[in-house]
Structure formats: C-alpha cells, structure tokens
Image (cartoon, rainbow, N blue to C red; front, side):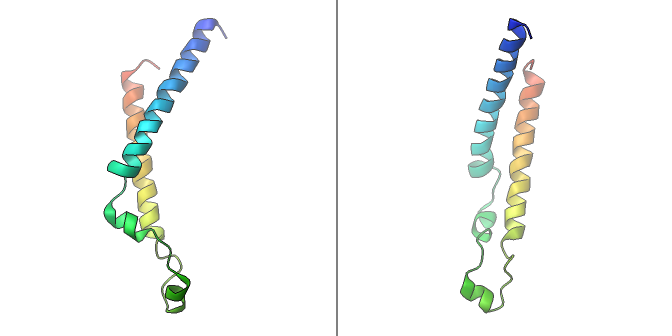
Length: 86
C-alpha cells in the first residue's frame, strides 16, 4: 500500500467515523426514535408479568427503534459516500 493509499484509507475512516457519530445522535435523539417507542421499550416488572403482562411487551417498540436507527445511519452514510470521493 502506497503512502497516498494509506492517507486515503485514514481519511475514509475519519469521514465514516464522523458521519456515524453524528448519525448516532440524530438517530437516537432527534429523528430515529419516537416518544411512543421511548415509553414502550421498557420491560414489564415482575409484578406486571405475574399479573399476566407478556414478558416481551417492549420488544415491538425496541425493534421499531432499531429499524429506524439503522435506516437513519444508512441514509446518512449513503449521502456522504455519494458526495465525498471516498
């Protein structure tokens, strides 16, 4: 690997790291999680499970957040990859 290729690899790593860092904040706190998902992700307490609540109650909200999170991250990375000559 030549010196220029090494610099290009480091620049690509730095750009991807920066995009994923910003994307994480956007996806987790701004556009990748709804208030309903935040409230619905909690696992039921032992008493709630004893009363008949499903132990997997919060899984739907959690999976919805994970899907939205990864969609935001993929879109951000794709946009940067399209704009920058990485």
